[in-house]
Image 1 (cartoon, rainbow, N blue to C red):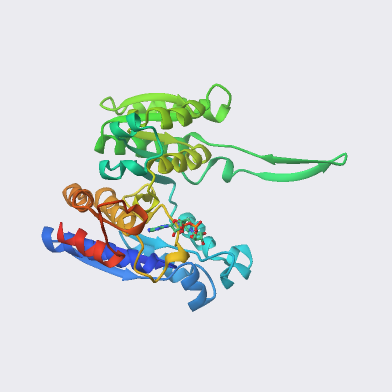
Image 2: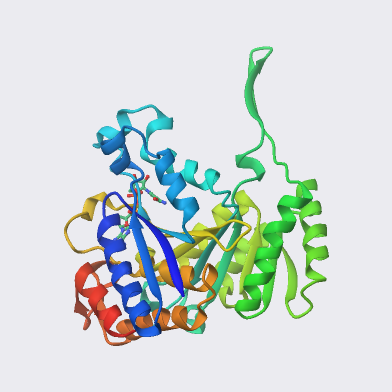
Length: 360
Ligand code: NAD
């Protein structure tokens, strides 16, 4: 199979971690007989330095022409980088919002998986972490409160701020379909999260999710109120497979879920549109504090590449092989600094990439 991938190394540790993900992808291509066509483009701070803007038309066109985009991370230290002297729409993060919009990436996927070898980093009680968990948060990314009309007015000397939360049934249906499709590739359970006891938008959400569920009789559906879901995530995270939810609830719950794993350098993510196309990136930022030192953990980016193989290319065996390589490296006791524990072997970013590639 021919895989056309655009890579956005980005800023900070971005180029280092993307290089290791490429190393692993090259090994996968060699072993499974695929032809990789990978092209680097600029975005974020690197694009500001080269072209004066965080996102160019050329980068958008290159991304649109590819099957998938693999990204490192963008941005610098807001306290010291000159990029943050620019107006907000010219700063590195504006590139990120711009590309999500240009590519119509409405579905955000963030897995939260607890590796038994890293259970000590999990902040939950031992009896909970011992059970492990493996969930995926599917968040609607382009609608809801963050995109609704907003204004601040002063009436009779009193300031009033208004934000609006709207969803139409088509926006809900397309993300629900993604949620059920992905549950089929996992353990076949969807927990749809809303606040249907209060919000109209949630009542519509629940009704449309129920309609979509009829086409997926093999997938078990439950509805969970968002406040209860926040509690269940720390009480019994093992109960969840796919959590399907709207933009703001997903923003908050996905951060909560990633915190309970305890290891930010391990968490991948994907943003998808209604084709097979996706943008894949680690959940963490560009870590300017450790850039260029060969100490970053490349695993989140490598696991993002595994998601790309699974969701954009339907190469499940190849994705499994990458995920298994990660498990094996951890089992063999190799750690980067962020996940280091007593008795393990400390390795740098490049060596971690080599160890992963060797295990494909
Ligand atoms: P961060 O995730 O970059 O760093 C937080 C802490 O985690 C730091 O101590 C860092 O060293 C550590 N860390 C992060 N990733 C690591 C890895 N792979 N290996 C080892 N340690 C790792 O968050 P921040 O410091 O708040 O943000 C830094 C920059 O990243 C900012 O400019 C921010 O806007 C940007 N950012 C970009 C994205 C994105 O591109 N999607 C996401 C979040 C933050």
